[in-house]
Image 1: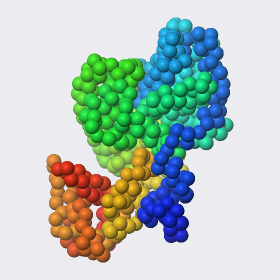
Image 2: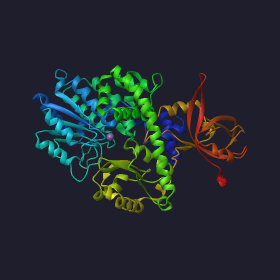
Image 3: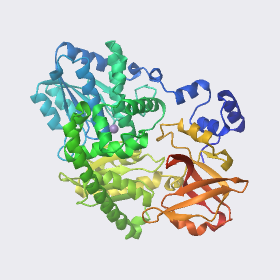
Image 4: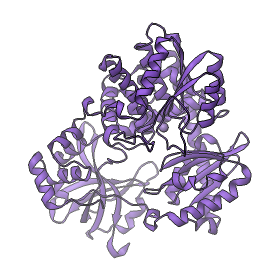
Length: 573
Ligand SMILES: [Mn+2]
C-alpha cells in the first residue's frame, strides 16, 4: 500500500478542487497538493517545460551549431538503433532540414550503427564514415556519454561532437564540445529522467529560442518524443509527463506520416492511442523493422512516411513478429529450466544465465520474463562478435547499474540505468562475473525488494466505483512508471456463484463481485490468467480483491469492469 495521505489533507484538497475523496487521495499520492499543481497535472502545457538553457553545456551546444551553420560545415546525427535513438535521430533531422538547413539539406546526414556488427554506442565505423564524408560536427543522440576514446578519435581527425544522452555518466566525461545529460553530477537541470530523444528535444527548444523560430513547428514533432518516452520505459512524471501528454495529443490528432504508417500496420487507425499502445504496438514494430532492415530504414520511414516502404515493412514486420515471439518463448523456457534444474542456482539472489546460441535480439525481453518467475536482478547473456554480451533487468527499487558497476573490472563495456542495462565481457570472465555479481546483490539487496509488491493506491468500498470515478481516473492519463493506473482494494466482497473460466484455453476467470455492505451493487470482474483461483472462491464466503477499474465496450454498450489483479482469502491462503 502506498503512503496514505491524512484524512485532513484529503478533505482539504477535495474541498479546494471540488472533487471526491478517492480522486483527492490519488492526487496527493502523485504529489499534487493544490489547485495550481492540479492544473499542471491535468492540463499540461508547453509553458510548463523547463528552460532548456538550465541544462549544463546547452549554451556551448547552441553556439557550436550556430558556427557550423554559419560556416556551412557538414553535420551528422549519430543515433542509437533502438526506438529512443531512431526517434531522436528523426527528430533532429526533421527539425534541421525544415528550419535552419532548409535551403541546404545536404549539409546534414545521419548514421545509425548496425546492431550486430557495431553494437551499442558510438562506433569507429560511424566516425570513419563522418571523416570520409567531410563531416565536421557529430551530434550523438541517446548514446555517447561514455564514449571517451571514440570522441578523442573523432577530435584527432578534425571532427567535433555534441552529445545528447540520458544514460549514467562514468567517472569522467568525453571531451565533446558539449555534453548534454541531465544525469551529469554537475548538471542542475531540474528534471533528471528525460528520454534520450527528449534531451534532443531540449536542444531543439534552445535553438528555437536562440534563432526565434516558430514554436509551433518544434511542437509539431513532439509525437516522436512521446514514442521515445513510452518505449524507453522512463518515468512518466514531471517534464516527461508534459511531453508525453502533448505528444499523445498530437499522435491522436495529426500524427507524423511515418508514425501513421506504423499505426496502420498495427491496426490502430481508429482507436485512441495510449502509452500502452506505444509500448506494445508501435515500439516493438519500430524495433522489428530495425532488426529486419536497419535502424537507418526506420529513420527513413519516420522522416518521410514513404508509403511503398511502409507497405513493404508491414508484411515483413508481421512475419518477423511471429518468429520473434516464438524465439522469445523458446529461450525463456530454456532459461527457466536452467534455473529449475539447479537447486543451487534457484536459491541465489540473482540470475546470470549464458548460452552461446541465444538470439541477441530477444535477451532483454527474456530477462524480463525470467524475472516474472524468479523475482530478482537478472542478466541474460549470449555470444556476439567474439564477446559475451547481454541485457540486465532489475526488480523494483534495486539499483542494478550500481551493482554492475561494482563488477566493472570484469567487463569490457556496460551502460544503462538503475532498472535496465547492457553489458559485454570476455567469455573467460563469465564465471567470475556471475560469482561477484551474486555477492554484490546478496550484500546490498533488501529482503523486501525480492518480493514482487502490488502497490495499492486506495482502499475503497464497492459503492465508490461509479461512472464518475471512472471518468475522473481517465483524466490521470497518460499512465506509466511514476503514475501507474490506480489500483484499489476492497475487503470482504463476495461472488454470486457465477464465476467461470473464459478465454481461448479457459485460462481467465470471469466473476461477478458484490459487496455485502451494499447488496444492490454488483460489478463484473475479470481475472486474467487466474482460473486456478476458482477453487478458493466459495459462494457467500467473503474475500478481498485488488483491482483496477476499466470500461468494457460490448455491442455498443459501455460497462464498468474490475480488472482483478489479486485475491486474498484470509487464513485459507
Ligand atoms: Mn535511451
